[in-house]
Length: 406
Image 1 (cartoon, helix red, strand yellow):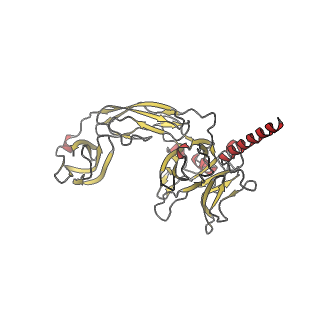
Image 2 (image 1 turned 120 degrees about the horizontal axis):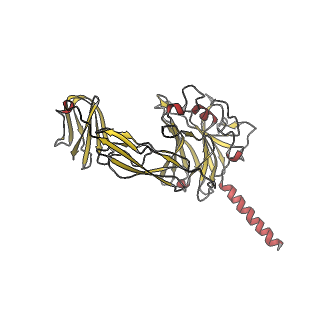
Image 3 (image 1 turned 30 degrees about the vertical axis):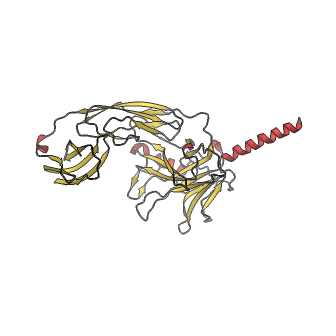
């Protein structure tokens, strides 16, 4: 009996150890109290569990990008030298966690420089399940307006983390977007992920590399203004038993005039990211999977959108765009000509200066757009598939839409 009990205890211990190895929590990494590792040893990476996290340290500037790890707890200091998560600890008050900094390509166009995690798939669990993400203290305080002019709430900014999972053998890849902060909407208060938030990673199963970049409308000539730091912890852990309810809001009705366009924003928070947006097939949208598509209907149209989170929770919203058939200044467009010639060229001419021409397909997707600033223009449409197209012509404050067939 004792032998059986001992064997059972060994089995339980083995299962517990195996479960523990499925979660990368960074706790085994060595650090002095209130300190961090940022790659100053120029090793180029660090490993924890089955993850290898890459780091690029520049000794000449004592600067770094990529991943670092930390146990710092400072939630008050607004500085890029503050390595603390906004909550001041890891998940469930754990001591250590990883922090990432996404630099910019200042030699070219200041676009974000991707950072990478490599996964040892032979030792990783069959499913990556998910992980926790959070803003750093520095970023959270920036959004709170600690730095003058940086308040996300006042400026209606947003920040997202874009993750691409890649199989390096066959180069298969899949990309998902995770919203870190969102203050774009008038209908609801904004939010930022200053607490550890669980996100789904099952979509990345069997991929061996994760590439991270960031995107934001808080941008200027030198790239993203928002400090591009984020924290991760407990990679590979199961979803918690309680997930916040997903909240979705949208205006039900919009009014536009003939020839005008309007954005249809969908506010969503809570649930489990990533979210997906599926719009019904009514004509006039430029993107049927976007959170904020642009609608350019030719008549009153009701759009249906289904918002789904990673748990499969679905919320449906209905948005009606009413198109007012207002009179157009006939003198502006009385000599307008819009037609296709035998050379598959779109000819547009008018007695008034044409400012902008936009061409949409029958679904409302923008196919071609060009600033004209002339009385006439000639646009090649030889590569357009056969079908019906809507040509929107803008002259000053007036616009008109014409239909052509190719």
